[in-house]
Length: 317
Image (cartoon, helix red, strand yellow):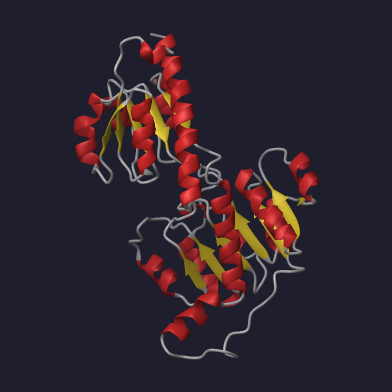
């Protein structure tokens, strides 16, 4: 293998990860410095000392970080999305980018389903009242998901898993994507439609898209107007996909909103705090991949991909 030719590779992990990742990397001969929560300025000072930079969603791998990382060979994202990494610039500088796109599929899909169910039955309100000594039976009526239409925006691994779960609940599935999804849709019994038709026809809309220029604020004022009254919106992808400031103006007519992601994490804008406190909104703190199962799979998948990348680095000198 390429990295066994006398070269000692050093890795810096800047975000909290499963402890097994450090051990697994050590097993393949990588020296690891584990500094979860390291601040940006400190990262700039020390990144030149490492060949591998391993991050989750918190750390921003900017051009400045890449330029300072004069010894970097590989940037690894423990997770799916790469929007916190300047991928184009890294590739131009000859770096290899790896991630673990499959590890959190079912955990993220199950969280999406959980948010749909919690909102449909107002479970969050019942829990809050009951814990506060108020017996809320009869106070909040729920709705069934059976027979309702689910619109899946982004029919990749997670979107398809959500559709499969929803199908078991007896929901009708609409799907849209920028790539050809006809084969997957046929397999799952989903109808492929454009985004406008999906938003106007769905009782529940769920987002599973990567964050880029096309998807930034894709659910804006004009598209929010298309969504039916008493519909449910769920977003477990990236916070910036929805213009949450505008979303506030639609909450009264919606059944509810479930968000695992916000535009700023943690929140900092007034409208984000208003959103969090609203009784029709269920918020979780970006926990889509936060299961023991997903974190274990993430370690195995990421280490395997890092091994392949190290071999490529070794083979190219």
